[in-house]
Length: 397
Image (tube, rainbow, N blue to C red; front, side, top):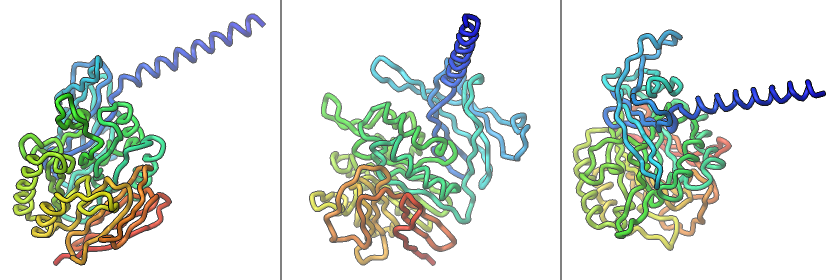
């Protein structure tokens, strides 16, 4: 019996040691890997990740996907940059690399790391010069990110795995600068954003006020999302536009529009110039707060009085929003724009306003797929069992 017990003890120790070794290796791999764009989606791709190892290199490797297991021999190495996120006494390291001079409409495989500790090889596809494409639009995530919001983004990916990007319309988390919630957000999405870029806009829950009363954007935002720097000076972390094939998509920071008069005026002038200069067939605006609310107790007057006329003047096609934790669609008797708001997470409000909505529902987690085919835009909203809830199409000559 003593010999048997000894063997069991040795086996247990080996198992624990092996597990610790695996854990040690795993803990040093890059995590929170995120694809975004800071430049032309047809020829560039930006990647950010959190570095958990002690390596002094910041590199990405990329190769055109040829379905050949020896692709690594042809991989091109690119050096990146580093930034820090202060969290009390802890300092997290986030790395960034941008792959450039890529071919349009081409699938690439890439990995990031420090030369010793690497991520898995992942794929992405650059924008084509023209042709059909689709993207996913998600409303507020905010709560129960790992356990409940995960169902939404994973079901959307399951249905539209070839989507070219995912729009997040604010309130990705519940409490600004809470690292545990960002950890859940990444876990909930799994590998999806390692393959499909994000186009995020911030909501009110990405903000807090500092000791002077000033509004401060969650510091995670800047280190995680490497976005175009074509917005107004001082607002470039969240106000930007991106051209993807025949689409111009514009992100506004509605939290600052609502609470900062200077930022509101700055964004108003900038938006008009961006829409006036657009040569794209389709123009879409993304922001968190809705122009028209689904709740009688909410009335975002500044959006309706100062930004709605700009949307209509320049023929914006869709305004994608969140904040009210319901679903609603309406165009107020006009062809453009169509105002939409949706919710992806489990936090729900009731809808008590019928003043502007053509379609509305509450108590439903939803995801949206928007497709572009020739001269038509197809919009569809789905429940999490894959059932179609709402749809429409827009046409252009």
